[in-house]
Image (tube, rainbow, N blue to C red; front, top):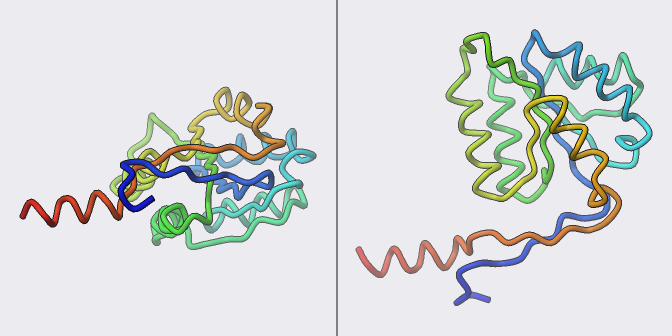
Length: 157
């Protein structure tokens, strides 16, 4: 495994789903969560500050809250992806409004891509993901073997 360029990780049958929404998209995400509550309650949910609290209050779904996005919540979710704790992200972002924490948002999107984590940034994609056959079973995916990549890079310096 140490010499392989890629390693296989498994997203379990019970997904660890991060729920995030910009302010103008919070109502839409809450409505989406209510529509898909029967599926979502079978998984572990977390989210950024106000979004997590509002989803729990409005839908009854238990959502572990981290900091709000502008106060580091996006970075906390990104760290959980790196740690292998978050393996699915629903992020209803507002493409028409500037965000003060845009670099944090871009970092979260980048780390989800690096770790081959499914991420939806709008309702249509979220609908496709949540109704996928993969929601009810394990899913194997390959990511770069970062330990080997770092070791190989160190050998060339």
